[in-house]
Figure 1 (tube, rainbow, N blue to C red):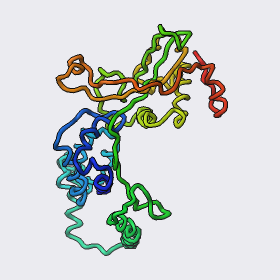
Figure 2 (cartoon, helix red, strand yellow):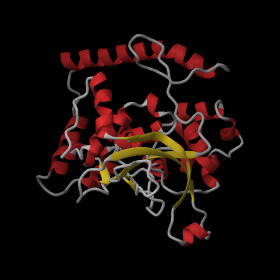
Figure 3 (cartoon, rainbow, N blue to C red):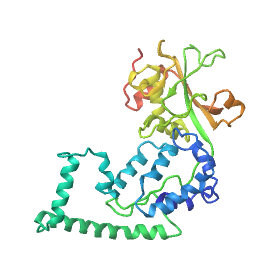
Length: 328
């Protein structure tokens, strides 16, 4: 529900049903390619109407396939399992005399035929449950009033316990996708016209235009995710990316294990590493780029950070108290 409210009260494109024209292409570090007009209104239907009931797994399954948001939707599905009774889930367990399923059914038959006197522990637990329900209802009052307000505030908390909060994702979306591409060269002169720059490839985020978008769910590639956010800002706001560059210059094994392809795997480490800023768009089905086997069309925007060497980064590392990477 909150995800739906933040959309209809956020970016105008959600109200005129055009956000989904961009959403699959620009959101998340590695979005599957899926563009269908029905998804424009289906998003509002699921989040604003279906959410009033305990959400069944099927809408979440749609989001898992199309949203590619790692483990988030899987976690949302877990509470819905409580909506299914034992008879519905019984097929998951072996049947037969003496089996777990048989013993559970026997216990249920015995409980139905008897009305045991409530024990002290069950009374305490019931009192605790009722008290917790009353507390949550009381704490929910300002949250509900906020949701009904025309000046709704999202992604905030209303009490010191930080429970019963308002949260909604993708209230506004960007209309274009940019990516930071890390490159290395073995050339002694980074400014030389004949310097050959080679791309590092990440596990899942867009890089090589010919690589098919991958499905990460339920896994979460945190470095890919951070690189996606870094592309919205400058490297001055993300000094960790220069820390990563230093690791690549030293061919650090742990850092390289987070990548899919190291162009210097069987060679000495690069002498220089730089970050390039690109704009990415899906190739058009049936178009020239798609015919060439390219899923993406990319265009260089400019430099994200200039070429740096390991020697140049030493003072940068020292000022921040980072351990100096040791070149192999």
